[in-house]
Image (tube, rainbow, N blue to C red; front, top):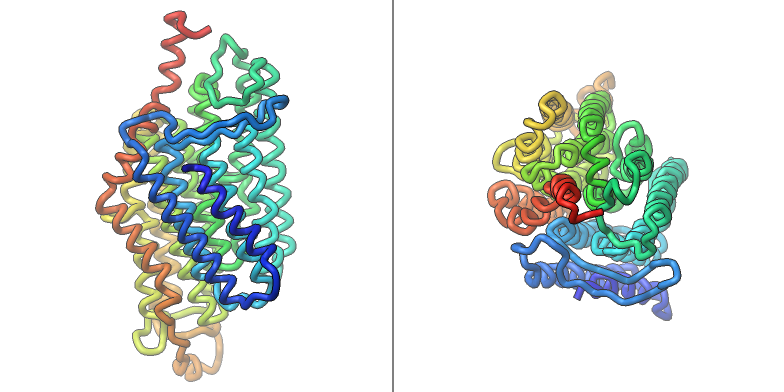
Length: 509
């Protein structure tokens, strides 16, 4: 059942590339959307077969692949992976739907989109460390191509910077996995916790440090974040949706699954420092967002801040905070995708994202009133307004982390307040006031008042409406996601204590 989540996108990508003859762009797009829709439906079928009362891996599939190096094909899904698979399949479909007017290489574009989706599914479902690494690296070149071919004017620089940073991330992660196998003597590369009797604490800290930096680059956390604003600025809107909504979650997933899951004792030792790192990342991302003039860069820096909440939750490692980490991954995926979609609509209609240029876009007759309304909803959700997904996730993270790290949690709460500041600046500058798309110093003031922006078709806002619905639904009815993930996150939160207790009782070496 799980293998179909790999087979559908990979086979679809290969079929698009190898189909004989010339195909019209619209036919290619429809075929890709059909495959992405099928993938989403199959992930829902997996959800129906998933038992939320079980904490461990379910629906497992396994067979020997390359025994000589410990690479086995082992797939499974639990309460941590299941929500992220659903987010991936949903947002990849949204990216495909909002891809229009593709002027070059449509076959390659949609094949890359399908390939990335399949690789992300594989990474979330892998139960073998080397298999995870293969899928983790498999999405690197396709995303680089999506930015470097279909990106903005400075796309070459942004794509190369992304490639270098992510390649370093992969090297560190592979080195940690190989070191773990070498020092423990376990050649099967299974995901099992390492105890201090198997590895000295110094060795554990070195391997954990390599994993931390590798996944911190992908998340990204300060100071490894510099590739993200450039990549978002130059990427097209559908690629930004995929990057923020899905690909960053590979880093946070790795943080929980491998850093905490493989080294629970070393993680507990480092947790105060990790909480401090989370606070720094949250505050830096928020303050950097306030300083931005480009709407897209502001949303990108907001991601840097909001990813820090997940590190805080993981550092605390309480049942409530770990559940909050899953909620934060899902809610950030939906909210950031919504915001990038709406920024894309604004750019298509005004040809600018400069907050010093845009004014009055909420004008009901000549502006973008519905887009502005959705934007206000999106920024309210990101700022953690009650009744929306952002509030649930932030409340759980802060509530679960406060007792363990009160100072770091309070600083992250300040960062949450700053989210309201910079998004209020965005909405106030771009959407209120007199309608204008020229600098305020333009002497031809009357010309600005005659601006009439092109209308926004329903098909352009339909994906954003679907995401907005999801954001509100998750905020009002969070029980569904909570039931899917609670057993798994509770077990993960108890892992350090369980390992220590088993060792004390002589049940682990």
